[in-house]
Image (cartoon, rainbow, N blue to C red; front, side, top):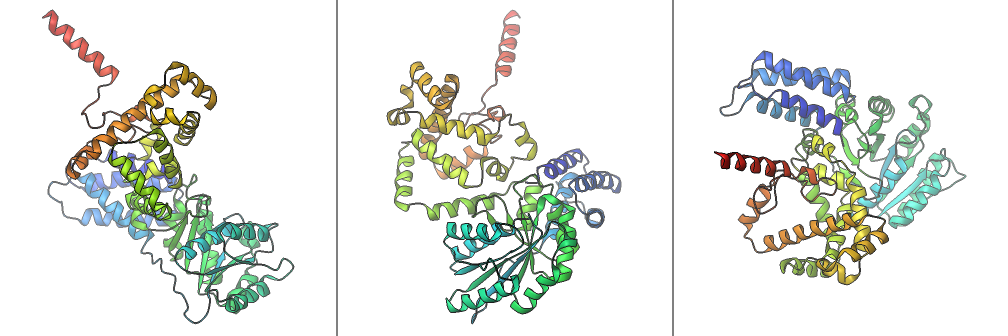
Amino acid sequence: MFEGLTKSLSDAMRRLTGPARLTEANVREGLEIVRQALLEADVNFNVVNAFIDHVTQEALGQEVIKNVNASQQIVKIVYDELVALMGPVDHVIPFAKDRPTVIMLCGLQGSGKTTTAAKMALMLREKGRQPLLVAADLQRPAAVDQLIVLGQQINVPVYSEPQGQPLSVCLNAVKQARQQHLDTVILDTAGRLHVAEMPMDELRAIDKQCKPDQVFFVCDAMTGQDAVNSAKAFHEALELNGVILTKLDGDARGGAALSIKEVTRVPIKFIGVGEKLDRLEEFHPERMAQRIMGQGDLMTLVEKVSRIQQHQDQEALRKQQEKLAKGDFTLADFRAAFGQLQQLGGIRQMMGMMPGMDASMLEEIEEDPEAAFRRMQGMIDSMTPEERKNPDEIDLSRRRRIAQGSGTQPHEVKRLVEQFGVMRTLMRQMMSMSTWQKFKMMTGLSKMGALMPGGPQLAKQKIGTGHRKTAKERAEERKKKRKKGKR
């Protein structure tokens, strides 16, 4: 998410390191780089100018803070202005007490409205609501069938009239929700490929007669400035309550997220960060600003882990924790951990949430982490239960058999076993440490790539044992010893 913008801003901040104090010259020089980065990210031109003006005024009007250099102050100012640009946001949906709450989703065709409707229904159902999905998109072929299938997947009822009219479908759906004591109605309305082709009169009629409590504009973050222009047109027609940005897990440059609130004055309330139906999240400006500034997003990562643990078998979770406490960590446990990582939204997305794992570090990884993890899963699946429990017994003949069964090479199996050995040692060490010792060990990691598939070249330290010398460093050390011996 926003890798290009994050990299550009990181480069801009690095070029600002050095000046001991803020001056008008170094502020304007640094912010010119920031301006270019924002424009390249497809942020609205007027928004960029206003943003740079605010940052400049803040930077030049700010007193020099003792022991803080110029670049650190500018980083803080840029971060604060990013948060202000995208926020504040209130995620609360006000629900009616004596009738079904009606939520209307609108947007262009292809923006992801139908999938977002199902995601929102699932999110609300998990919060105790009883939603009804309404297939009011009678324009796009198979839109009704798609919503019915999605509703079945999440166990949420869907109201549809394939031969009806959008307005009557919505009105009848609200009536049915009352009769069946369902408390939330989500209207999936029709869209077109371009704003000029949108049936705005139809949407206005639905808005006027169904009286939705919330109207959300669903837009594709990958369309950049087009998303902002579309949001403005829909807001003028319907008076939006919020925006839902979709496809933020794709190659989104960030322009829509940074421009849409400033241009429309409508807040981004939710974001879609994946194709799965549980990939709708609340939008937090401060967390997004941290991601854009390359500072990770640990809070969102913690929330993802918590949600997964809530749905896990608590007895199985307890047994797993007991095994870890004893240092009894097997390849089967290692394999199970992969599934949990994938539930978090993908390995690369998870790595991007780690503080310190900025865009430039992710680019250094030569291999796609997802593909590497799938290969490792295949190797573990090709082992016998005894081999997973005691990988030290895997000799050359066994490696060849495992490699053949998983479509890999014997040396890859060997490397997996070695990596697992390091991780198992780490787990045993951690279980015998005090909380303070664990903290010291984790903060001693220079980079997070030590055990990441495809990223061993990132590791410069061996966990728990101080600095791990590279082959180049060892060669230099031998060379120095030889010189010393000659003397």
